Image (tube, rainbow, N blue to C red; front, side):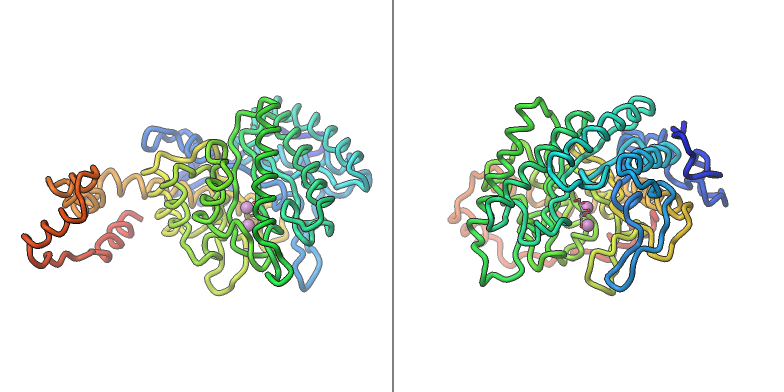
Length: 441
Ligand code: XLS
Ligand code: NI
Ligand code: NI
């Protein structure tokens, strides 16, 4: 049931319901049926869909060539607290009309930053109290909170990696306040995305010191949150570049190494974003698999990139094939650990109707739902799993399983190979796998 504040912002739009793929109603789900059980869990539980506060309520469409194009009715008040409360009302009206269970925010998405840290903190406290009531009234939960340590000009040389300790400390203060807010709102996770944690030029950069400082900083944040009773998971969100030329959390493999190097592996996992994967020259599926292999597949920032250009276009997901490949990894690795699917995506600059925000999220949710159904059917009904088993069947033979069990030496391999002759040529059958996936779409 929709939670509507004093004013209704999305007038004429009711609760979005599942109507099935035959429906012609643009304001209905065609595939996302929250109650439908797939592979032992409801779709609602598989996905934990979340609205991203920043894109959905704050982003008005500005780009490097022109200002914003969207006039949001929740952004009219001149008093920052009133504006923030209107925005929160719009947030909860939207989330509940969509039938989503979660949201995510940066500290200064909730309310504009003030001119001092103390005043900013006060503003955030007021909003936390307000959001607490909204959560209680609706049952909507906080998937994760984070601190925006990249927009303010003070962070132009980095936040935790800044060469100036005073800026590092300011980032620390901001993270402490954002953690307090996340904990007060029963947030399930906390995210670090290091948009300015990297370098523009190595000539003026002490990379080792900067990375060690981030490691120290994240340990401090973790220790502080645990002392306050935070039970959730921390996520690092890898991204190779943009806005910084080179970011330290380049991709999943790099971030996993960072997590292990600084002793964070019991508390940290990864939040994988589709468009960040492709910017790192990987597929989304690759990044999920790398995270899953390390037991660190925590959460997903859902969007899609543009194959013809090289920046974070943050478009809503609509690529069923790409998402189905991803859902294969998700299902086979047992799902997300603590996180959910956060739509870190924005409607286009020229999508200026309020209903476009609904259409975008409906499309995103349907893409994931359809992909999940495809992946589940491929695993359960197609020859796919059998083919994969067969491809590695040699490790089930006597010698092969001894190898896996660590019982063989290099000399044993030598002796085995000598007795065997030239191994048989075995096709990789890639086209067959691709055809099976397509068949189930
Ligand atoms: C930017 C990131 C950002 C994080 C949260 O590219 O995706 O939105 O998800 O700081
Ligand atoms: Ni993101
Ligand atoms: Ni992004």
